[in-house]
Structure formats: structure tokens, C-alpha cells
Image (cartoon, rainbow, N blue to C red; front, side, top):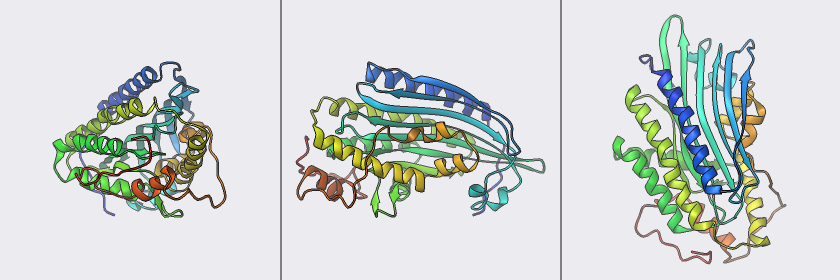
Length: 324
């Protein structure tokens, strides 16, 4: 893949936005939970032969009334060379110094009727003494329900569409499709959830417009997620629903450790393991060859919701046995 050389970006503006976004997300999730707060682990990464500098803020909320665990990472790393996982796909970047920064969020709710959610927005800039910087943006957000609700899926995707709308009518369908394809667990032959938005290597619109799009995605996450939390949190659940939640969390772990680009890049570049793996759920279970009961809400998750769909189409209305 050929990556164009682009004019120097405003790195300071991106850095400022990402740090402020982490603060806003932290406050909003604390307010929603109402009982627990995020503990912050501010860290600095000592120089190595590959890394010149690095710092970040890992924030984790545990044992909340609404959120069993939530993590919000901010990181900024400046390096002398990219890890093999990156240069294998982009050999033209070999030997360049790089700068990577981003905010990554994963929320694991306590109530099985509240879906897990993930958001990530990031910026990458590769420098060279003999050429202009090469930069791009990436990120998105996606939803992983344990029990399906048509209303929630519609709201999630309508908000994703609203984030994309100012940038062209083709943007939401393009990045929605990319999300469906990216968050697919190949060895299980199933999606991780109902998708949302995913984009990477975004530089085609010029820096200012690409940065505006990144901000739009970051700013729409809470609008997409919190109304779903508020609707589903009051629903009563029992041991059956909890067991299914823990079982489905196993799929989340499998995807993150086998396929997720951010996880693999972080581990292969010698990143901070505790911060990278904060995305994993606090409790999870696997069961050999487990199958849901026919016509059960658990079966309906697979049959109706874990399918790539146009969630904005008017005819996508399911009659389910879950608590819709």
C-alpha cells in the first residue's frame, strides 16, 4: 500500500483534544455509575533503543454499581523505529521515527442487559530527516450486546451516522462496513457485536477535515452509549443471564488477544502491558461446546443480532423474547 507524504500536522492540537476527551469521558462515566470513581495511574516510559519517550494516564473504575469495570487510556509515545507488525504492512515507513497518541475506552457493565462498549481514536505521525511527515487518523466505536434490543441497535447506528453526516453521505456506510469486517472473530465465524464505526489510515481529506472527523467520532460516543445504559440498567437479571454474559465475554477476550491491531501493536512495540490489557473483562468463563437453548433470548442474539445488518432500515424490527 502506498501512503502519500502529507503536510505537517498540528500535533499539539491533537494532543490537547485527546487529553480533554479523556477527562470528559471519565467524568461522564463516573456520573453515570454514581458510586465508584476512576483510579489514575500516570506513567512515563523510559527510553529504550526503540522508544525515545512515552507517557500516559491509565484510568480504571472497578466494582461500580453500573460498571463492573471501565478503563480509559490516554497514551503518547515517540519512537525511533516501528515494530515489525507495522513495517510488515508498510515497508516504506521502515527506519522512520514515529509519534503515536490516542484515547482508548472499554466499558464492561455489571448488568448483562447493558452492552459492553468500546471506543478508540488515535493519531499517528511518522517523521524522517529527508522527507515530510506521513500521518493518519484512526479509530471508531462499537457495541457488544449480550441480549439484543432493536431500539438500542438503531440508536447506536443513528448516532454513528450523525457523527459521519457532515463529512459526506458515503462516510457512514463505508466505515460501518469496515467495522463489521474488522470486528469479526474468524475462528468462531461470528461478529463480536453489532458494529458501529471503524476507520484507519485516514488522511485523504487533508489534516483539518480529518481532525474534525476524529473529533466528531469522539464527541458522539457518549451520546451513543449512555442512553442505552440508562434504559437497560434497571432491568432485573439472574444467574442465567450472568452466566451468558461471562461466556460471551470470552469472545471479547479472544478477539482482543488474537486480532486487535492496537493490542498487538502495543505488545509488540514493548508497550505498557497493564495499560494495554485493561480492555479485558474482570470476570469471564469458557465452556466446551456450549449451545444456547432453541428459541431462547441467547439463541436470538446469534440468529438476529450477530449479523451484519442495515440497522437504519425501517424493516429491521425483531420480535424477541428479551425484555424489549
